[in-house]
Length: 300
Image (cartoon, rainbow, N blue to C red; front, side, top):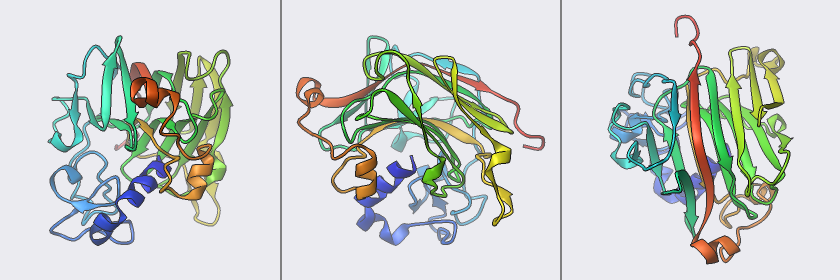
């Protein structure tokens, strides 16, 4: 998702240059809230994804709706709302979205029509440790990436990323407050048929002392908090702030992206691929999504 944010920033660099924000350059009082994409504003900018460290003050962002134990199925999109229309009441809709979602045969399709930036879903409730599980068929094709992640407002992140050029593995990754360290990434093999044609279940088990990535019941990777100690900074660089579940399909291989991102994604996107010709879009398919909330830290 760090790569996705960078990609979106590149697309809109001119429009956002005058109102950008970061931990070292907070938003002004008249546009106090720093969005997930590093833009200052009001209203929706102060809701999910608002970064308190980069906003005018830590009080600028709206309170976070707390985690709820839920299972989500996709008979329709009634429990979703376009992100530009969301007013902060998580009881009205559990998900915000941008892009082009569809429901087909009881499943959610994240679609990416030709020359678009795809689709993003974000749960409106914040998890502060817990387990999320998704039944997923990834997208396919070089340059096309499917993501199933936990992302906090200060950019703590725990990822599954599916690179469409490699349908036998899923990438696992984590970040601490947006610090880019590609050494944190690792491949996990997916047994059986490929990730596009066959359903697989992907879980993130996020605990205060460790995180596990689990595929079809098999623990593929375990990250211990104790292994993230940074001697120089004198701190643990471990994801430990309230996060939202996000699911997306995005064009990492878009020609305007950094060459390193394009190479990571397997090359530039073929906008005349089989899926584009047959359906009019690339797509990833999401079945049942489960959220289990763990107890937050004492005092949280």
